[in-house]
Length: 146
Image 1 (cartoon, rainbow, N blue to C red):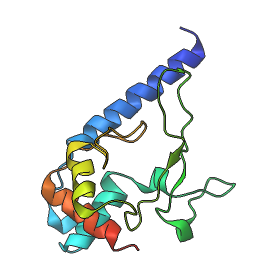
Image 2 (cartoon, rainbow, N blue to C red; image 1 turned 135 degrees about the vertical axis):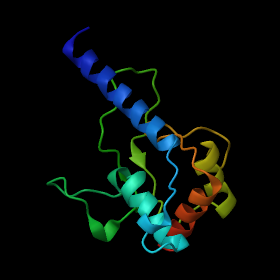
Image 3 (cartoon, rainbow, N blue to C red; image 1 turned 90 degrees about the vertical axis):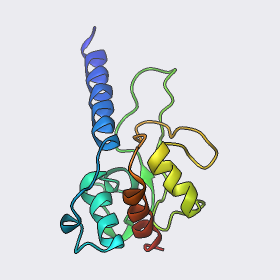
Image 4 (tube, one colour; image 1 turned 135 degrees about the horizontal axis):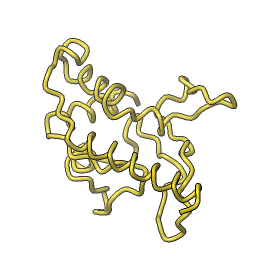
């Protein structure tokens, strides 16, 4: 393998491992979730566990997150692998307020890894398998950001 293929393989392996860890993430302690309330727990999962901000918030020219555009959608900060047959998202959609998704569709995305039209999200979006309670907390938090 040439160095570019090695890097791409390492990136994909890292993304899949990251996805596997997040897929099995179960937030058990409400004390870590901003006082135990539903929205606080959702914020904790979004910011500290799933790290949604890394892809769904745009960056400035220096690579710093643009906090005024928090979770409003952004170009994916990771280059796609050099495999033309691999479908790769170029932009992460806005998730603040969950535009275009009902509460149940959002929960299904986070618990079953299926979009509102029954498809899997394109990489690098992980296919989450949160428990329903954690998914409800994430949805409550994201809906509160309208």
